[in-house]
Amino acid sequence: MYASTTQSPVLLLGAAHVIDLEEPLRRELSQRTLDGVAIELDPERAASLLSDAKPGAARRGGPLFVRLWGHVQRRLGAEIGGGEPGAEMKVAAELAKERNLPLFLIDDPIRLTLLELIRTMPFKERIALLAGAVAALFVPSRIVRRELDRYAEEPAAYTAELRRASPTLARVLLDDRNEHMAARLAALRDRGYGRMAVVVGDAHLEGLRSALGRRGVPVETIPFQRLRAVTASSPSPS
Image 1: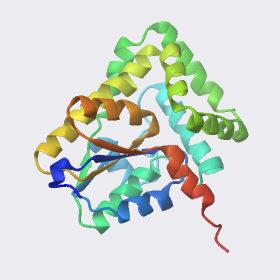
Image 2 (image 1 turned 90 degrees about the vertical axis):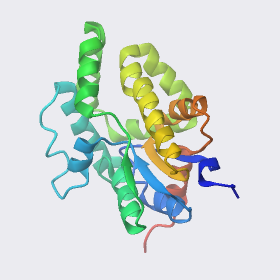
Image 3 (image 1 turned 120 degrees about the horizontal axis):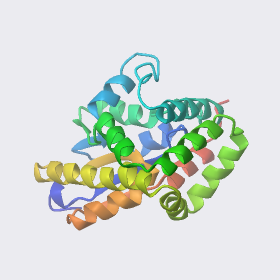
């Protein structure tokens, strides 16, 4: 036991946006004593995702590659994950509501993030990103499953590949956001919210852990691989 809530580690849970993790997330969060729940969303995305509107309905604008990736995520979620993109954030929000816990949105505004990405991304990286989004429209789901398995085994290697292929993308979408989310979590901790469960994309897990560690915040992590293993080992409904 910890002497106070501010001595408790922050619980970081890594999710994949196209895999249904409702059961393991509920299992992990329901058995914990928590002061609050935080999710990798900003108010704009939360309003869209947590509303009754059709998923993706409020995201028709924006850069072409963002719309393409959104379409890819929805297709892959239906084909291999059994759920819609962002379902893990909805589960965390629902659990917070069920347990009368405050829900904190800790991510940067998506519009500002995209503006920064477009402003700083070299032309060569933009073309490569757009080409990747187009190619992903036609990738068979079996290949995506294989790549998810490879990521689960070596997430650090995958992140390193991303940094080599698109350093600007890695900086804007991972590094900068990790620092900002860590700062918000540290501020919440100073306000007495020590026993926090934080649901983020698994690619953020290690960077966010490091960013919190630099701020003196202890962390417990449950990666996507572990959550996914719970789902895979669960018996199928009869």
